[in-house]
Length: 119
Image 1 (cartoon, rainbow, N blue to C red):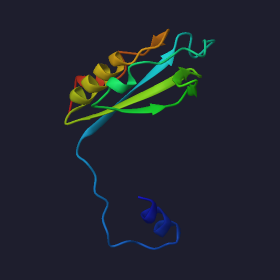
Image 2: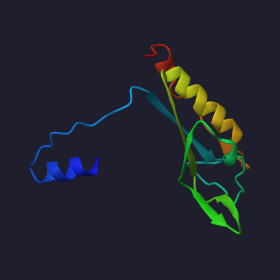
Image 3: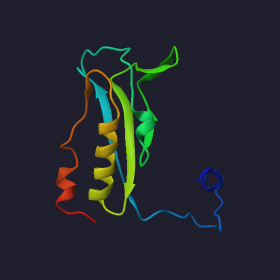
């Protein structure tokens, strides 16, 4: 997408088109207990290697002594794709269950309103 943005900034248009996927993406953010207030850091994160059907984006993490540990309130974002919102949410939830650290929290209710009208 960068070449398109550069061309647009220069006032040029491109004859090429951007290809997109028709899938839906959903993200679940794993947070530290106490977030957004006070929370502990340095909790060892395990299970990320077991996540196969989702992308994991590190936010509040640190690599230390060969381990990945929590280092912030918003620890990891787990994003999954599906043909429908329901499928994408299900994959994200399944992946979130595979990841562990002491005090792991995440909301299971966000997006439920969208499930009533899935595309």
